[in-house]
Length: 493
Image (cartoon, rainbow, N blue to C red):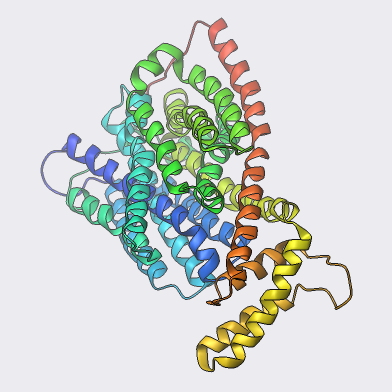
């Protein structure tokens, strides 16, 4: 098997760890910038919440695709090769999104970026484990500081551009290129160590057996699907949902992830006091409580307080799950770590995020005042018809397209309004983004914002039962661990 070293000279542990952290910043800046532009994309390209959910979801399940393909090959191809592939993916995916023309290219760009993100984790999680074999859980938490840390950096940069009056979503996506260039400089020419599996002589067959036939591993994969959904599902939506309600949602996202970064950095004392299993149990309790509280919205103070509880609850989930598997099932190696990430991201991208978008569409419609919405849509139809006749060319075509979307949801003349759920919000969105100068645009914007905010918050509530299931599982594991004399990490010889 390839030791994946490459380069010349001795392994520079500090530079490799720093480069890995910067590569993880690239993945999280991508996460933050896509979250920051979701509300804008809905308007500019007239997308439904479900459409945006698929774009956001591609940014997650694409991660899973690259993990499941390349994590098993980490020992063979080498970590350095995977890092190089990630670099190309981050560069190419960002450019595809920047020059996107609609749903298809936005989806493709998000997918390529996500596959690059998966390659970073497929290479860097086993790299950190190989660099620090005696302190894996703590060092993986330190490494994963930079996922929320990068979201803070990307979120604040996006907010800064908005505050400066620079509203280009393409420029926000271009922020991904900064950490991409930095980790390219730090890592691409370096010598990498062999993975733990290569050093210990663990074969590919042994890795697959340890990963796919160990009951504890299968249980942890199930738990990873739930912990990732609780952490990443709301994090993917919170900015757009709160922005629809008039708050600076990207700042709340940055605040949540700032708490996560600080707590992960100081994970050492927590891990040694509670043990990984104890941390997972406490995290399940707090994340469920915070998410339930956040789902009811309320004042700015209430949202910040509930977001704080949620952040404390989810901050240790991802790295502690990886550390637990690496320490308790070490023969699973790079494959086990990769499959954990694969399951987490695949479930969030293919199930959780689109599911939340669908719930938001349905619940948001319930918050609409049918009579007021009907009146605004009638006025919108008349305004767009009048304005489109006065404007020839592409501008008039855009107004006529918006008018067709609006009139498509209106009932026949003389009938009571019975507005369809998803199409009604899309009609309001088309009117808002049509470029019309009518005062009715602001009324439509207000109605739409209320619906999107309410629907998004309700979608958070649907994830709370997962926390209850995790409390039961981690509680039983913790009690069994206590009865058997405490948590024990296993090491490969």
